[in-house]
Length: 190
Image (cartoon, rainbow, N blue to C red; front, side, top):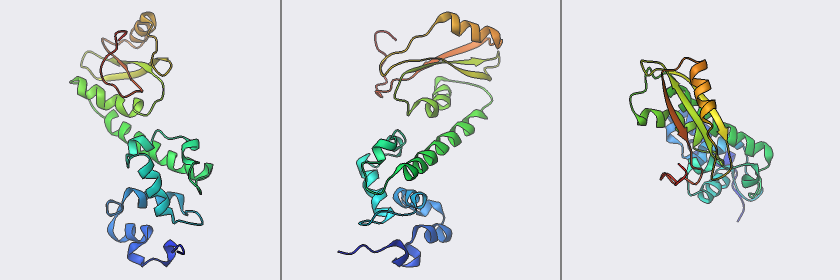
């Protein structure tokens, strides 16, 4: 069976034209990603290629956001340039969420802290330990990485934490660290 190129599709089915007519929300994830990579390979269109890539990560954009160039390179037609383009777009999406949250006036609950740090920590392959510094009104002063560890542990030096809090005149702090495994339950060391 011969591959039908996207430019041979009906205009209303082509991802770019579809987006211009109906908006980005009308496109599937595969179609949006296909726009980024521009072309597929000799056997499949960019849309079909991205459908296969999405299927390989369970159609989960969060999992795709953790992929590296070597993960994409398993697919014919996905060289470093296309891989980095997709990785960069997913990083921009993460940064967009960070900017939305950075405008918050005060931390009111642990859920607020989760929303603030989740985009920073969700895709990491190693554990990190952070301190959130706040003033007396619980307004964020700064977020400071205290340490970066391995896949299942990191250290937290109390002196480093207190030093940051004192230097920035924080009156409240919150301590945050991730579990790259995705297991939300604290370990014995936690």
